[in-house]
Image: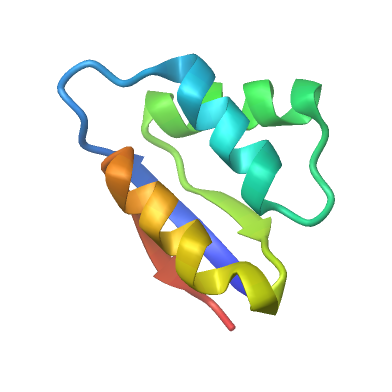
Amino acid sequence: MKLNLLSCDAQRPDRRAIANCIVAISSNISESLSNELTGILLEGDAVEIEIEDKDTASALRALRKLDIDYEIIE
């Protein structure tokens, strides 16, 4: 499943927690790429990631906990 991470609405976003979440839920993103994508997301640009279908519910829950808005692409 592909997700488009749109924005982070947290008052004080935890950059490290977001990067760790992206690594944990994505199927093929390294830590360094995750840090870069986190920076892009926090600057206000959308980021596309792919997650495994079996982990969908827990991945979406983790994103909601971090106040990350997302849309499901496919």
